[in-house]
Image 1 (cartoon, helix red, strand yellow):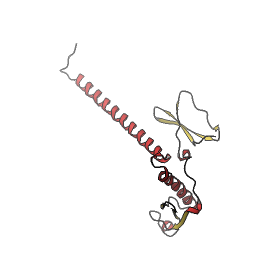
Image 2 (cartoon, one colour):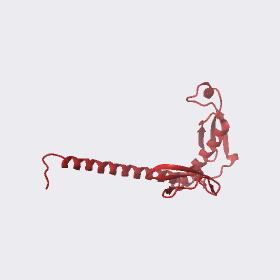
Image 3 (spheres, one colour):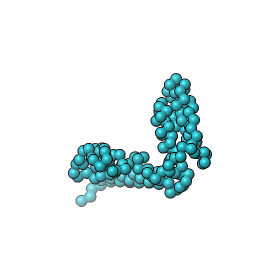
Image 4 (cartoon, one colour):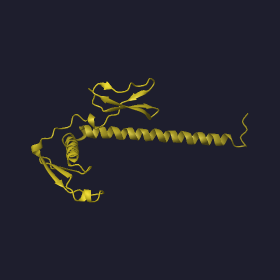
Length: 166
């Protein structure tokens, strides 16, 4: 059984095919010649603390933001408070109370993981890895732009009529 939900097949940095995992069965066989990059979502966060419902205080309040009457008159915003730590999570991502309750608990688990483990938490380490990958990608892009600029300058210098090198 796999912890990740999908696999991106990347070739030269572009997604060529997205495969979905169902248990241990792959729906489409991978083509030959592609380099595999496993891309995982939040389903990989397995070491998060378990929530005890007795330690939670849940309220349903009216939401705010775009959506008009459907948002402003219904109490589908979930406010979840962890009593021992005092951490409060407010979730109003969808119009469904059940989905908001589920998402609020996911967010609460992540926040408790950060509160308990600090820098060693899974959420923080994944965020740091993501930031490092982004910085590396940016650095490579800047290097390529610099190389292109220097190449264009060299071409322009070679194509000037005064440069006769024999």
